[in-house]
Length: 495
Image 1 (cartoon, rainbow, N blue to C red):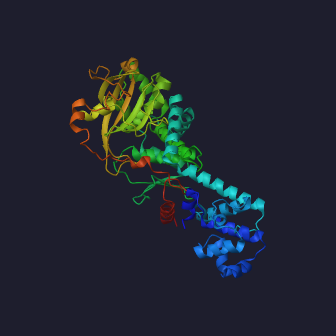
Image 2: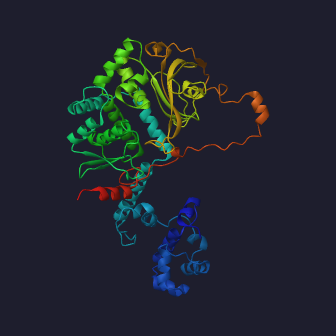
Image 3: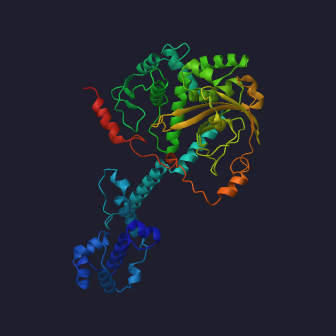
């Protein structure tokens, strides 16, 4: 006999439904388990197990039960519950046998006939709602892409500028003594101290955690510095503080998890390159027609990617410059993107852009063909949506990847429509390409001579991007191993 889940999916009778049908027919005829046992020559205890769906009866016993109850075998084996109550009892039984119920740590309620109908309906309703929320929280890849797309469109609609985060970041860095330049590690530590936290660097941080905050003892645990003086640890510390500053609650869905990640990343960037210093710096460079991501990066001691993303926060709102940002892998897949300047990103039917291949003619991919990758690459690209100027810097991650799991070669691109290229260094570039994408004839179809030679003779094995398939693990802290985190905190807690 098939398992309960298999049978249900195929519309067949599962042991629980079969047992409830036997019980329903027995009780409507006024038979006790002892009486039915005498009729079929079986122990009442065995029949009880059958009726509760905990024992699958042999075919011979089933025939005997059908004869004793005076019904055809087909009536016993019907996949439909015999009554509304029986359907609820089956639903409660299944819920209490599932993996979600075992995580609740509460005793099971026996779905017997003595259980009042309103209580039975309420219990089943609660279990259904728990299951619905769990399904929402783990986030299927489709749900994750949908939530991410909604956030991207929201950010583009507001020019990726959040005044409330800018204001709180400015207040905190000023209170810690910051006046300009790169935000030092010491200043970040003072910010933490003002909020009642001490920053500690440990080499045994749980592998699934970027940082761990001990709210009871006022400690924030961070990994050791891989690059002395790098901005990574400052950013991680600021993001950990951001959860407290922005008064985040534990996320209840993948959408909330992503929104919180966007907000803490924004807050950290607003602290590392505070608006009250960054905007005058950018305005001065614009007047000189010498805007450059690399200068912005160096002035505040942050990564090229962080500087490029910070430009999306400030350039449109304060300088009146629409722009786009891309992070692209060496295989041409778009890892992260933002555009409020009309650049047409490739996207799937849901509007998601992550994992989509960008045009081979765009600067973000052309830059990989250069021998000199130490400096920025500048290019004009004619597209069906207009001409865009782009500045691209390539880089590479270690095999272990960064905080978000990225690894391998990548490019970071900031670009603007042709009319706004005049404000940027590199506007005199003579490199110009033409892109017809999304027309497949642009770069997606191989040359005719190559098609003639290799069609039907080539079988490549595609590289799989595992991260786009993974659901968010559930737990006290979404996405991390709770057991590791609690053991880590217990190990490091002060005596």
